[in-house]
Length: 568
Image 1: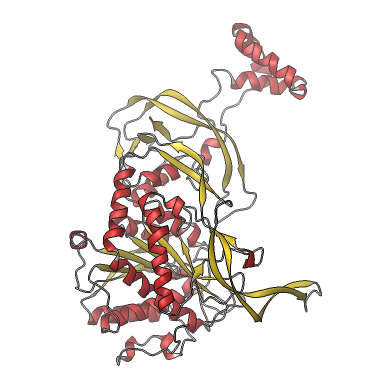
Image 2: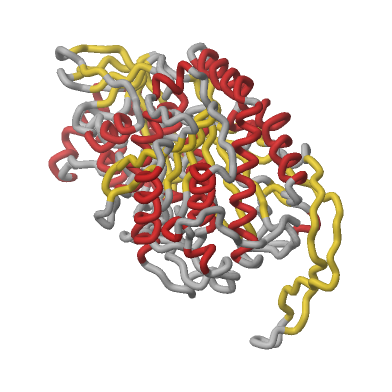
């Protein structure tokens, strides 16, 4: 294991972090972080501070840019074919390892302790969840081994920001996604700390699921980029292991790779072809060791990305080109348990001993019995619910919140210049289930069932036309298709269409219904068949009136009609 001596490579006391002053016991406060980066920017042409937007607590979200030659023009970066790395910290402020590691990393780059190659651009979010970071305590993550105090998981509105990347409820998310769309990073790193099982490893790494990332990038990530990171970290003294996604059982029998849907940071950026990684240090390890491991891993990212920049850029460029012709898109994935990799895992023997609290058996990891062995790691996923993308989506101008989010994500949108009749495919929401309790401020829909129909519809001047021949194509499919598990429909953006607005008075509609059945033999036959097949229906007069009503011209076509239409 690497050395854990904390020593600052500077004589400027204002650039020595609280982590270093306390020999790894403390993490920096928001005020300390702000002062530190302002000082760093004032003494170095290689640092640029950028305000991205206002967070929910009212403070600006800030990014720190670093280049070794002081160039901060994106055109220069593109011309020089530089790798852009976006590093996010403190999305969960109880997991502050990346905050202190990034401060030391950028300070050491400025002062010359480490060398960042000229083909690397670093964009660092020092503290993402400012509301949670300001809500400091030392109890919110039970049993975590330091630091002395730290922030809270929820932001100032009690939102988990790592569940917000589709619904965009938080000001933080809106600011970061706008920045991400402009920056278009090649690699995204979101620093975290893991709980769960006990084991010997300090650093675990969640790599974006390669099958889901897909294309040349997914293949390159799985076969080349991720193995290179493991190899380099091994040379630096760290035996990394994939994120131990095992909370119900002990890990000696292996585990399944974490499925990061688009609500999560890494799942979101993958929609745009960015290589995404989530480092997860182990919360039971001392804070000093965790921060230094995070610092070391970021150095490894810089070295590996610099040496393989052309391959990384080429894989992304080829995928972007292939996206133009891509028609089929999976909306969901399931783990392939028949195809598992083998990873060398260093754990502790697990047993059960009597609980001093309940007297019942409790799980116990015996540190006197370490082991090293290969375990299965199921890191392959199969597509589920694959759909064919349309040429474009049409969204009526009334659905402003959805349009706002699309624009914030760099989606190109045009508006109809005149009232226009178009032949489109419309979805009808046939069935869905809704969570009984709120999840991150929403009542999520799931198991959504729809039917499609071809219709001629009148659209209005100013309605929105979203062509899919653009880089956000996959993002558009996975947010606008109604059966997508993390789509806008699932997150309740269109719940207004799920309530019928007009009804009938039974005694008045009786005569109308009788006339409809008399004039429409097909409807009458449907009614008779329904009576035969459903005894309860046959005994329910109001249900039969409702059946006729729903099959008549009086029934509103907008009820349960999904208000996003496909232009095929």
